[in-house]
Image 1 (cartoon, rainbow, N blue to C red):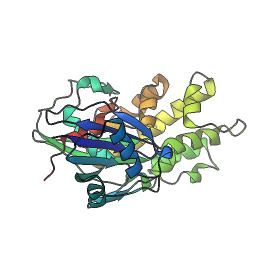
Image 2: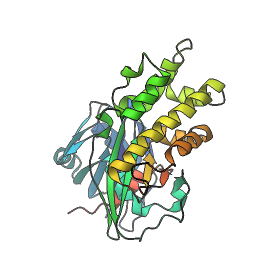
Image 3: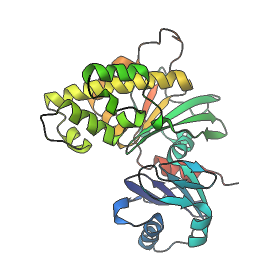
Image 4: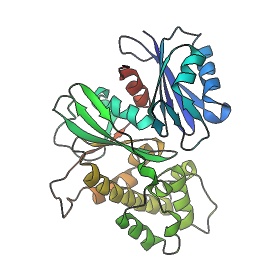
Length: 309
């Protein structure tokens, strides 16, 4: 059985073929701006693959999925599994992209993970039921709570990017930006690619406005290091709140381009660890190790592992 697996973000899309033995073929990356719709993007992928005979397609999208319909949060693309199945003559299933990463967690090797905080033991795949949390920071922001058992993973949906900033995050932001903190009312306004760039540019009003990648390219400059220290602290404060809200003793797993660039940066990561690690005063026993998913094909692996009923 051959399955098309797709990870559709707000900016880019990855597609690959998965096979009955659990292997995944070469992942191909596409820029969404180059295509009018997801349909035309799939057509391009199938052409590059030589029009393989696939019987199923599992699509993970960076946006809410209701039933078997969904849309991208940051792009006007709409998805319907029935329409896609008819268009490509195969069985189609939709899921949220963080849900796909949740399904992938039991299948990720330790080498696929960057250990952000110290752990007492290597991540175990068979340690009984555990709660975990996938935190995606890329074009947008969202989370997916995950229950991991010996039978696999059961991820849940959420729209956490659109909730208000936790008070302690807002207060820390307001201390650095007294007149501009109100411009970051939701979690996604602050913790996303556009939020990262917007906050840096607000804190550097006399400098030319930069995009996120341009800021990270200047990470050795003192003002950028200062910003990364501050942003790592803000992210840690957010995750301390998430740790209490979801009790993810099995781990918090960062995903997304922004999260990975931050956790691979020594300045931002050290600042995050310093602020995140101390026990909470009201719930000192609530702990959760933090990892960053370093495998580009992780969501595709999750799509490949889903059993279609």
